[in-house]
Amino acid sequence: MSKAPATTPPTTSPAPSDSYFAEAAKSLSAAKAEIERIIIGQSSVVEHTLVTLASGGHVLLIGVPGLAKTLLVETTAHVLGLSSNRIQCTPDLMPADILGSEVLEDGEKGRRSFRFIPGPVFAQLLMADEINRASPRTQSALLQAMQEHTISAGGKTHALPSPFHVMATQNPIEQEGTYPLPEAQLDRFMMQIDVAYPDEQAERAILLATTTGKPEKTKPVLSAKELLKIQELVRAMPIGEKVVDSILKLVRSARPGPDAPSFINEFVSWAPGPRASQALMLTARARALLDGRTTPSIDDVQALAVPVLQHRMAITYGAQAEGLSKTAVIEKLVQTL
Image 1 (cartoon, rainbow, N blue to C red):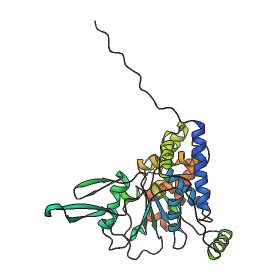
Image 2 (tube, helix red, strand yellow; image 1 turned 45 degrees about the vertical axis):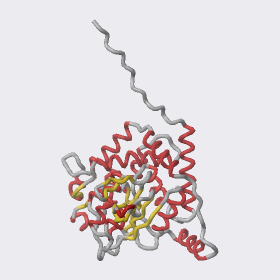
Image 3 (cartoon, rainbow, N blue to C red; image 1 turned 120 degrees about the horizontal axis):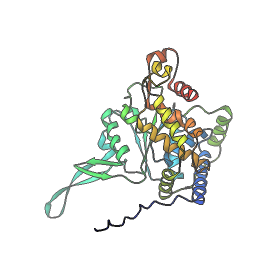
Image 4 (tube, rainbow, N blue to C red; image 1 turned 120 degrees about the vertical axis):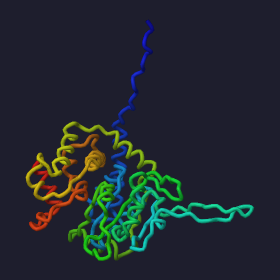
């Protein structure tokens, strides 16, 4: 009787060392401090932006004009050492204006062939300014890029640079001539970050910094290669069962049904899917890393619940009639759980 062949136990990659965690945390903290030298009074916005990028996700920035959303994107790209392009979205913007197009060229011996000219999407950090002003056809052109990090043109698939992130801005007030983003595209954004007005002290600092002397300049703190290593580290971070349970309970309780709190059934019309749970898992780890910790806590989940969930759910007309917002519903859910 022949013996069964010996099997080799599967190998597992070694856990990152504490020194590696400390180095990554120090780099992220330095990047945050460098960005905040330019983006004054928006510490939470800067933190959430870095957490999203360290998690490998895309950012949707929502705020009225003049709150430095564009400056935040430009500063972040420079500090993180990423190549960047900007798209100013308008109703007449076409998909080819973003993705690129093929042109017919005359070659040797009179032969003609098509050559693909890459569009602005071929950058490590793409800014889509006022994304809701682009037509649905153009918005959908970004969908494959955001999810697959590739685009299709002329029957061929082209890989985008790595890392690849989209930071889109949106004006919440002026809605004439705009096209609301479809739920499928909203779900591709890891976070919706609301940019609020700065407080009086911060606005005073902004006035003095921007109207006297020469504008401040930033210096690169990270590189694209280092950011990729941080993203790999975030995915390798250990996470406790209690934290995983809290993520599942939070996301699943936000869905109307027999197991949901009564106010969720009353005020929520559609709710987050599994991609929200994935986003909370990654961003909770990235927030812990930015804070210098090697594992996330339930506090990280609670702190990120609003920016991760708010664009992935809708409230009923009854909730709006009572003056409730999605933020208020999520905060109440967090307190309930």
